[in-house]
Length: 431
Image 1 (cartoon, one colour):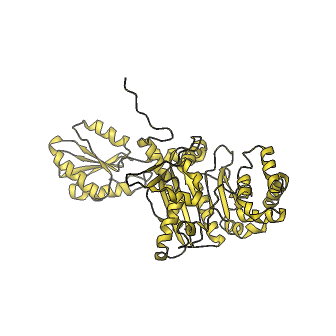
Image 2 (spheres, one colour; image 1 turned 60 degrees about the vertical axis):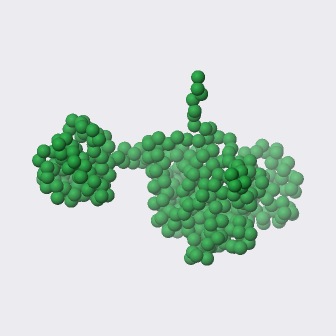
Image 3 (tube, rainbow, N blue to C red; image 1 turned 60 degrees about the horizontal axis):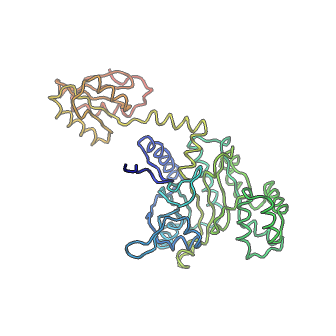
């Protein structure tokens, strides 16, 4: 018996209803990014493996889908977009005014263990600002992240942003007498502070010449009011976003390429992994371009897997999503073929309406009028155009208000346009 071929582990099928949810999130991502003045870009799914080695070292290779192609090139399916952005921006940065505010939505691949919020294939929103070294750029990104969450229906009761800065830890290491060359090792310990056994952390810190108690005291001191973060906090407070921010030096993000401010979004119940995260990476463009381009940069990413889980687990965002899906029709107009002898005229009407920009459906085969109206309503069409023996006289029906009128075929487009553009809650438009 032949073995059934199934979806590979960590990969997904998107049926129409799944695509509807995905597109709801994507449309929102694009709308907010454009409100903030970001421009969309895209890069290739396949890149040279060395691009990721430059950013993250040889250890990254174990997390990649990588192979040697027919041209004997070592290539990898992209696990993230930031290295591609750095490569693209470095090669043509003189062509764009600074700061460069770019965003991308794409598909990514990581060969790693599946778990809640993490698959081997996923979509991700990336937002980056290049060419601006001040905290104003970091604040702009954090504000955008807040608006991305609020627009999906979340409030300050649902999520918060943990804000940190890797540079603050350098002052701590100096005060503790720790060799600055060991800063990357120290930051890896801080990154695992909440996940690793206390005695393991204590031993690692002792090897560096400090203690867990000193680390925790430093984190608490920063949380009570560090002047380092004040310009950034003042910026966000002026936007009315202070309630979303929590200074927490326990967040450093594990990737070594971060150089300053970092942040992550978490749900209040701590049921999910970080919903989004990012920070400043001022050296990456120079690294990727071998010093040819030196662009300060900061950015963040938000994945579709975690955000979809969070929406489904939170009352208001889930309700907002379901309301959107329940009112999102498959067609604006349904053309009813009341007389099969007039099907050619019905097809001509379909094409005129589509050329006007309407989403139009009609019966592909003969069907009773009652059945056609049922299909139109199932598709949540706003208007029905009935083509019968009286053509070129046609009937136009406002399906939301159950009223119809008879017009000449030449006036049909204007009447349909009026119905489709109206609010379904308004009174009848037809006399």
